[in-house]
Image (cartoon, rainbow, N blue to C red; front, side, top):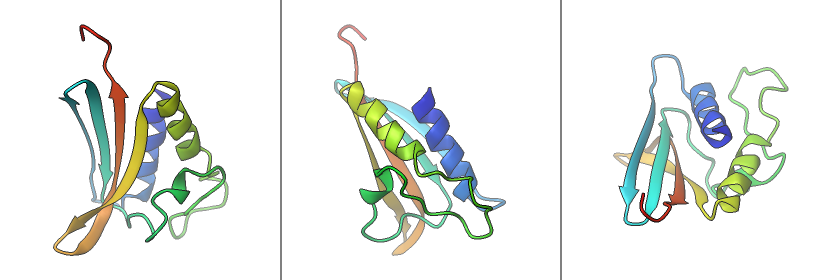
Length: 113
């Protein structure tokens, strides 16, 4: 639950008024895959891995200090790894332009699931 709280909260924070946050889930062979997509500014170029470092933060313009501590994505990545899964991030590209971010959580399914 904590991973979903962190990802959805971040997506809401970075999505401008009138934008959307989309959560999708599906099965891919022996994994559950969940994506959280937003309509925000996306991830700065070359920072797709750095955003998972402890205390890394990119605050939306105009946001007051203290809203993004730089811990949520780091914690989420560690939780995913503790469950033999992975959490990755990419930009959502449409017509060659960044239109937001996509966070993808992959978790192994239990046998018989």
